[in-house]
Length: 167
Image 1 (cartoon, rainbow, N blue to C red):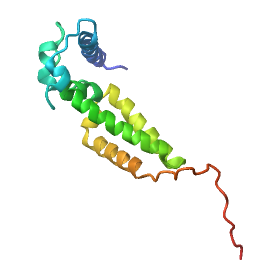
Image 2: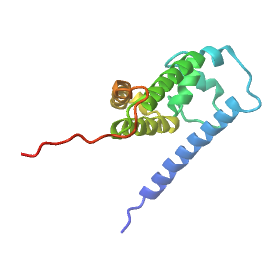
Image 3: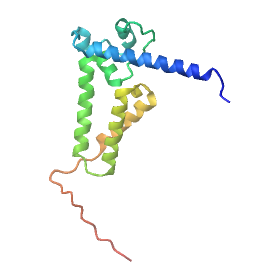
Image 4: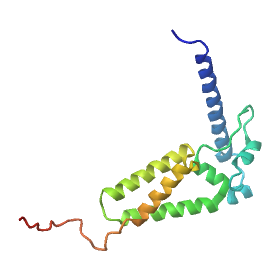
C-alpha cells in the first residue's frame, strides 16, 4: 500500500527544480541573447565568489528561489572572473591538450584525456569543481597529464620486440 503524502512532496520538489531551471534558461537568454549589453563586469567579471549577489538583481521575475551557483563551472567562472579567468582556464586546457597529443601513445595518456574530458563536460552542466574532493582529483589528473613523457621527435609508431632469453 502506498503512503499518502509522498507523491505531492515529490511533485513539489520537481516543480521547484523546474522553476529553478526555467529561471536559469531565462537568465542565459537574457545574458547572451540579442539584448546583451557589454558592461565592465563582462570583461573583468564581478569578482570571485560573487555569483549570488551578481545574479540577484538579474533574476527573472517570478523566480523566488535563491541561487548560490550558476550550476555550470564554466559559466560561473565567466561571470565571476571575466576574460582573465577564462583566458587562464583556456591556456591551461590548451597546454594539457598539447602535451597529451605529443605524449607517447598508450593507455595512460588516453585514459587521462578521457577523464579530463568527462570532468570538463560535467563542469559544463554542474559545479563539481566547487567540491574539494573533485577539485583535488582534477588537479591530480592535470598533474599526471603534464607528467606523461613526450614521444621523441621522429619516433616511429612501430615497436620492436626485444629478444628474451629462455633458460
